[in-house]
Image (cartoon, rainbow, N blue to C red; front, side, top):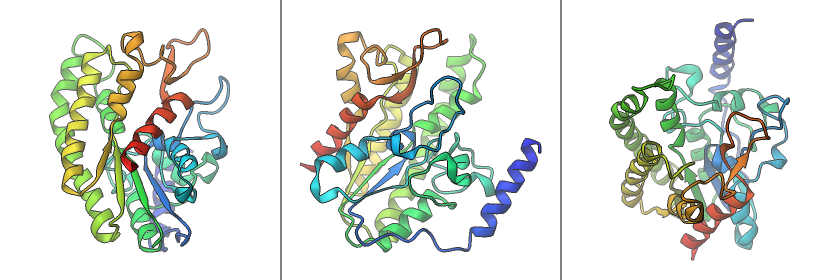
Length: 291
């Protein structure tokens, strides 16, 4: 089966279940975690293993560490999906031209390890969970990092025009992100009827020595803060926390032990996903907002 046929098969499966009700939330849920691979706690597999492993129990994101520290939030439901963008959060790539960075595979094939299985959009599942979860006291969200990843992918391969390409695509991406985030938070506050604590996590830079990458992320965070303020949402400063934690290494987040290291001999030193140390730093930023 070729890739195109596989895509059509996935789209057909999702269309077939689009009329089914969302995964019903338990009345015991106290903390709802939303977002992408950072909230999910994704880590790359050991060398020689398939890219995604059916081992959701080993994935510990900052929401799990927050829940461990706050007894009133120990009933956690995570809808986070690795590879989610602000657009694919709202509209499924299987039934539209909206791209994602890998989330569709996690949603379609249960063995890939979503913590809460669902086939629709994270948006629809979130609203259904909020409507059916009257005891939810906290919602956290980190989204937007993969929006920038798509820009990088569109500008490949690296070359003399790589930076100019990214800078040229960034304004439109930031505008789209602002609109998508506004829609996401509207759905949480209005359609989901959620009036409780809502905390957004700023995106950290995987390398603060890189001015292009770090500047783009900082710009995305400015948009995030602006939209969050309009919805009475707090902002956990993951960007600033990682900058401070890596300052002794000159902004080298990998050398500071905040990113998952690749094995010796790899072409790059670290993956872009946080280690347990990094996730705990992000959790501390959420806990600070809860105080």
